[in-house]
Length: 231
Image (cartoon, rainbow, N blue to C red; front, side, top):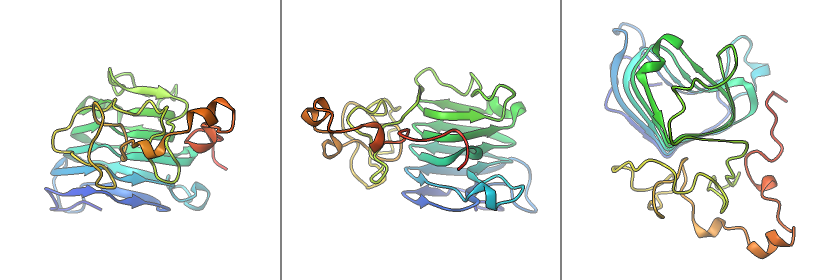
């Protein structure tokens, strides 16, 4: 939890797993609304949340940002198996939040409608994602001009690296102060990748194996057998 008087905080290179809320950046008690957090969250992996069937009326949330301002969320990867029963990321009463180069897979995005204009977002990737809107579609003003909307992110489920055919490779926004990824590997290629981990040639699929039908890209990546609901 980042709350109360905490500010100027950097949270990076963590794996969050099996929590009701992985990370909460909020107001806390005895603090003014929209507290200036000056917080940077980058190159983290927000993996499986707690089973929503075990959390009662409380929705599991990957990253919760509410009643604060000045938060930057760059190059993180969010994944769930529970579809719209969980919130990959949740925005409450926010001010000045930047959301760039993040990969979201199989979950819900929750946002306070009145404050969504305080969110600046672009170069994110969305696969099997819904929202808390009547149509369950992501708000158009959250989708940046360079965002990717796809069925599969083509990320290795073990190493979290993009596979050779992933649309995440070199399609992120250039963020000068982020010079390495989750594994502290340097940014390579023609630009930043989307997500927490940079693509390397070690994750290439053998082209001949692919041509011979010996390799199923979908079975090796996010999206192979996912559903939009819980299991």
